[in-house]
Length: 400
Image 1 (tube, rainbow, N blue to C red):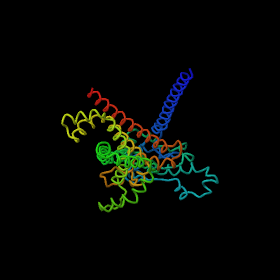
Image 2: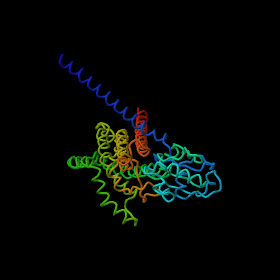
Image 3: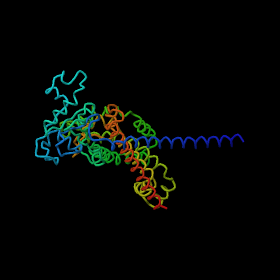
Image 4: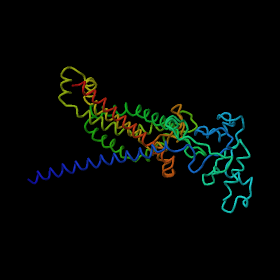
């Protein structure tokens, strides 16, 4: 009777625990996407500021890219924006003190909007970047330029990540997306053959004494903090890469891939080796009895039988590589640029979130852009896991 009651209690506790975990994951996902998708409701201009022009100017709105090009002097004529053939004059709030004295602006700058309006009315070429609290839009002869909201293409196809740029921050994530994929995939290309080789050796070739000595050491490597790996990469691997390939700096995508490969090895080796050792002894003996060599047995029997576990090892290795933060932050150079080779500095999605979230104003566009990066990372990991699961099920079905 007591055992039956105990079993019921344990069952209910496990059910409750699973339900709580599921609900927690659901709420975290909702919060993550709610914060991230709020970015697309934000105008592509620095929060608390606006752009004003002469009311005779026929240009009514600008995109984030156009604002950047104007203030970087890449666009210098209103004609390039659909306006008249007039040179663009950029006017910032501090320039008002060149036109009026402190007495004319007022003790609390209460006359500043009126004086700004006067300056803008006198010059059709002006585009004024001023705080909203001093907006001169209510005055005759002045109009506010409408600024487009940040779009999906601006975010996912944008090539520049300049979250603190003035007056229009840019949140193009393509450099981080490509940097993450490059570093992670190259890391797996390094780690997978080596990890499977070591797993085969431990499972099929090594003496029991050697296996018992090496296995705990390999598993211990998985528990080393990532900052220690990062320090090793910064002190050892980065100078080695720099000297070997004669590069100006050693913090490159290749350095990040090497350190990630080292970090992913313990996971790949442990999971793959356990899967291979679970191959029934009878299958090995049957293969040998039919005349197969030891290597043929490994290749034709052990590896096919353990392919589900090996697939899991690959997925866990990729997950470790894509989600790693601190070590990558230390050795990849943190340049938010589209990589053209393994020898370029790069920045990954997790490193960007870790480096910038503490400085992003809560609720602002920069804050939301980082949350959306977290959504992207979440989706990438989910797609990898689902794909691996589908491949594993497909292979198991063929074996039946």
